[in-house]
Each structure stands twice: as C-alpha cells, then as structure tokens.
Length: 180
Length: 132
Image 1 (tube, rainbow over the protein chains, first blue to last red):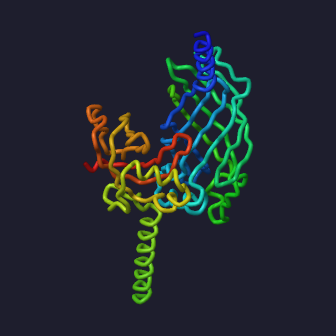
Image 2 (image 1 turned 135 degrees about the vertical axis):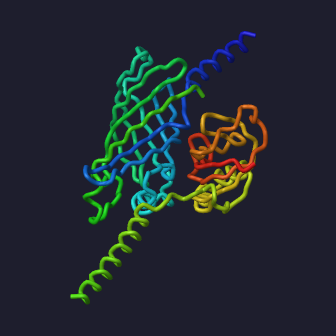
Image 3 (image 1 turned 45 degrees about the horizontal axis):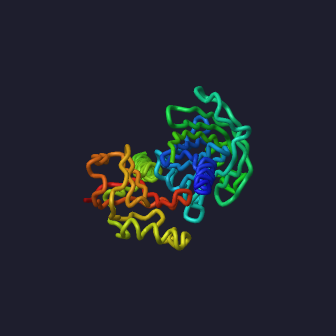
C-alpha cells in the first residue's frame, strides 16, 4: 500500500513538473517593414501556435509562412516566392526561455526578457526580446514586440525595391494561452 | 499639325493601356479558394498521417493547394475548426462558424493547406469554407 502511495506521489510530482503547459493555436503575429511614403509592407498571421511551460518558462512559437496575409495579393506572392521561399521553408519558429521566470505578480502586465533561437528562411539566429506576461483568469496573455533584419536570415532584397522595404522589420505578437 | 496630334493621341492611348494593365497587375485580386476546384480530396486523418510519415514529401504535395477534407468536427471555436483532432482550419472571413450542436458530426470542408504544425501534430488550412 505504501508503495502504491509512493508511486502515486511520484507520478503526481512528475505531472506537476511536465504538465503545466499553456498554449494557443490562434496567436496573432504581425510584421511590418514599411517605409514612409510607399505602400505599407505588412502582414498578419492569425494562426500562430505558441506553447508556454509555466514550470520552466520555456516558450515555443511556430508560424506557418503561408499563413501571413497581405492586403496586396502581389506583395503576398513576392513575399512567399522571392523573399521567404515558403515552398522550401514553410515555417518560422522560435524556441527559447524566459529569463528569471516566475509566476509571481502577474495580475498586471509584467516584463520579462526572453532568449532563444529564431529560425526564419531556414536560418537560425539567437535573439533576445522583451515580452510582457499577464495572468488573465485561467489564461495567460503573452505579448511581444521586437525587430530583426532580413539580412540576418539570408533574405536578399533586390535593389529595385530596396528603398520600398525597410531593413528593419518590426514584429509584434499577441498570444492568449489556455491550459492544455 | 494634325498628324502630330494623331501621334499624340496614339501615345496617350498606349500609355493609358499600360497604366491600366500595370494597375491590374499590381493590385490583382487574391486567390479565391472558395471558387477553386480542390486539387486533392482526402480524409483529415489520412492527410495528417501523410505529414507525419514524410513531412517534406507531403509538404511538396499539398502546400498551398486547395484541399477538400472530410472528418468529424472535434472542436468549434470562433472562426476555427478542428477535424478528427488532427486538422486545424481557419474559416474564410465570410464563412459563418457552425453551431456547437454540429460537434462530433461529419463534415466536408475545403481550404488551402498552409503547412504542418509539428508542435501540436496538426495540419493547418486557411480560407476554409464548409462544403457539406
């Protein structure tokens, strides 16, 4: 009997350690590389997956590149075919960890720094970004804003359009994470 | 004088045509998945199995293609559906989300495959419309 209780306890601790995952499939990811006076270069992906492990502070984000929608259809085509080559590199991912993660004081938006690997266009780069986290009832609201450069991910922007596309790309994300 | 104005007229006419063609090229319409004939018709489970077995091959085959899927509706959310727990669909903007009473009923749906989510083991489709 004692043994069963012990196993049960071990199992529940095991579950505590690995089971606290919060996720979303409908996270929003926006990027903008607009230059003033030219047509806005921006797109939105409303089906981004994000997972947060609230025991370890580990974060995984996955956006399917074809899921980025532009207002301008031709821009969307160029984004997929010429720049992101989404037939070959269909995913953009982030795998990282929240630094000094704790679940304390999350009733208001709290800032954390996150370090991890951002993979776009088949190339991985380590980045550091700031996120805000807030506990919203049973859910967590995770938001982020950071910028990156096409050159860091081997994305060539030809001379003809260079002045119309900013070399600093702003990325914003918003994820409402529910318990898995 | 008269000859010049005729030449001028032709030049203006050509410029207008170039402008119209150019405008229509730059501001062309998005693909209309709803009116496209499906390139593949398959069950939701089989589609996901193919991605699990060989993601690269399935991606070459299905990515960006219009696919007609059938399966059980296992989740209904605001603008999103899940078929057989393995295919995630984002409904087209004009499509109304089915009522919760449709949960666990069979459905046929058409959408564009945008890839495989290996974090959750789901194939994702967008611009989906309900066929039946």
